[in-house]
Image (cartoon, rainbow, N blue to C red; front, top):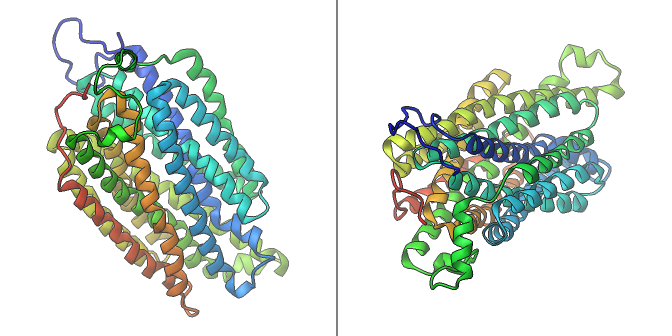
Length: 462
């Protein structure tokens, strides 16, 4: 059995007590898969600026370079979100049809390989190609891992286990910040080379993780051809009124969080770069360098600060994601999600208008991390509770990744608005005004909450 119980018959006081060693091993493996997944995602967000500067500087006039980098960066981020969605749809269905474990192996190999290949790109189209296929692996891994943990862990511990799975993604983000801090002084290309390392995790998964009993049972029932037992079908997500309602609500909730983070939240390093570039350029230690070396020194200093601020943001993210799981156990999934969506909107406005120097960046990045990433814990906890076993990975993948398609316009819109509002007298003004507008995507989530079901205290649908 994968779900152990306390042998005395009493219910353990804490969620982590009385859980089998195998269940813990599954959580660790899935958490590492998702941790490395998010690490690979954010290696890109942290070196997006300097990598595009290097690729585009010989092709774009100097006075247009900053705006062009932001615009192309928005396009690449949109491509990433579309690839993420494509992978989520494809591997979500594969996860229900071929199994959670096989799907994790395929997706981890995919995102690790194409992150490594990103080190070789020489043009924006090559960059976009690598980002798209990396994102396909990224999008597929989460649905399989979340379904696996949900089906292996006991009911009483499931919420906190899934919250822990999502919270540990922040550790992947922190790892990306450390890697970037250490290696970006040499080259952003080395950063992507390190992103290929997670492929080694596949060996452990293949040797240690078996398919969950719930999935094996659902597969057997489907094989017998019983009515209403279709496995891994997007069409089946809309086969009943309840499933249709759950799916539409999930897509709207996902759009709010994904659009908010990828359309605004993860562009805070870009704002910080625009704020600090002239400050560092005028610093005495930079001016003391030979003129030919100053630009590189400024870039290195800005990148180091971005990595440190991003690290602080991810400390907040860990607290926010773990905190959402605990709060949702106490007050319910829907009230907790409404609270964090509203506070995420406030945190984005505060950060994008309040960041003026390194101290303000550290202070405002933390609450932005708490509230902008907390909704992702809701997706790990809540989405698996909306679907029966035969559709769980498909449903989680569909909600998460339909949201990415809808949210893919957010970073593109941010880039376009940044150019529209660009002010030659203040390089930061364009992105500040653009972020104010794009952040309204959080209110899409409130529409989803109007008809989303409350699942607190209910068993997983079979």
